[in-house]
Amino acid sequence: MSGKKIAIIYKSLTGNTRQVAEAIRDALGGEEIVYFGEPKPDIVADLYFVGSWTDKGSCDGTVGEYLKQLETLPPKLREAWLYGSWDVYEGQFFEDFRDVPEHYEDRQWTHVIEPFAPDKGWTVCRSYDFGYGKPFSCAWWAVDYDGVIYRILELYGCTRMPNEGVKWTPDRQFSEIRRIETEHPWLKGREITGVADPAIWDASRGESVAQTAARYGVYFTPGDNERIAGWMQCHYRLQFDENGYPRMYVFKNCKAFIRTVPLMLYSQTRPEDLDTAMEDHVCDEWRYFCMSRPVKPMMQAQTAAVWSDPLNQIRS
Image (tube, helix red, strand yellow):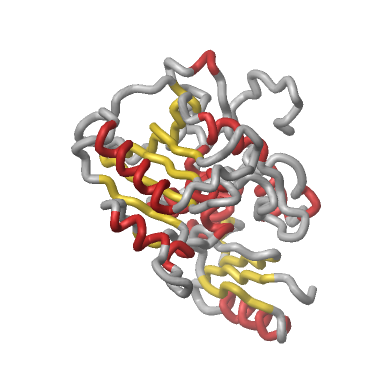
C-alpha cells in the first residue's frame, strides 16, 4: 500500500465508529493519511475508508449523502472513487462535455450554445493562463443571477499549429486584453475581476507578469492551483440536472475551448489528473475560474445522451 494517499471518513454517534477509524489510522502506521474526519466535498485520495454508525441497517445521513455524491460523478471517477477500480483512468478526461448543435437554441443537454449579449446586471470575470512558447489563454465569463457561468469570449495565443504559442510578450498580451475590454460591447464599461495562475506573481527575474498586467489596468487575484479539486469543480459545472440544464455554458465562438477540451486525456503517471504534456492551457484557466466560484455536485445529476460521436471519442 506504500505510496498511496489515504482518506478515512467517518460519522460517529456514540464514539464507536470513531474508535474503529482511529484503529485503522493507527494500523496504517507510516502511510500518508491526507484526511481524517467527517464527510466533506472534494476529498482527494487514492484509497478511501468510509464508516458510519447505523440505525436498523441505515447509515448516517451525511455519510449517505456523501456516497450519493460519488454516484453522480462521471463514470471513470465514480468507478475509481466509489468502487476502487483505479485501472479505468485512460482515454478522454472530459467525457462529460457535450457539443450538440441541435440544442444550441434551447440550451438543453449541451454545453455549447448560441452567443447572446449578457445582461447588464450579470457579473463579468476574466481567467488567464500565461504562455509564450506555448499558447496563453484568456477568457471572459458572465455569471447570471443563478450562478450559472457562461464563457462568452476568449483570446488564445496559438499559431495555426496546435500547442504552439504566438510568442507575444506580456506587454503585447495585456495591451490586447485591455483593448478588448475597452472596445467590445459586451465588456466595455464593466468592472471586470480576474483570476490567474499564481506563477505570474513570480518577480525573481524582474517585473512579474502580474505587475506588467497591472500597468495596463488588467488586474488579477491568484487562482487556487489545487489540480484535482479544480478538475472536480469543472466536472460539477458540466453536470446536467433532471431537465438537461448544466451550470456552465460555452458560446460557440469560443473555438479554443471547444477544440481543446475534448482532446484532453488522463495522465499515465498520476490518476485523476490530466496529461500536462497536452494542450491544456484553456483547461488551466477554466480550472482557476471554477475554483474561484466553487459549487457542490448535483445530487440528481443526469448523463446526457451521446448525440454524435463520429471519431468515437466519447466512451460509455
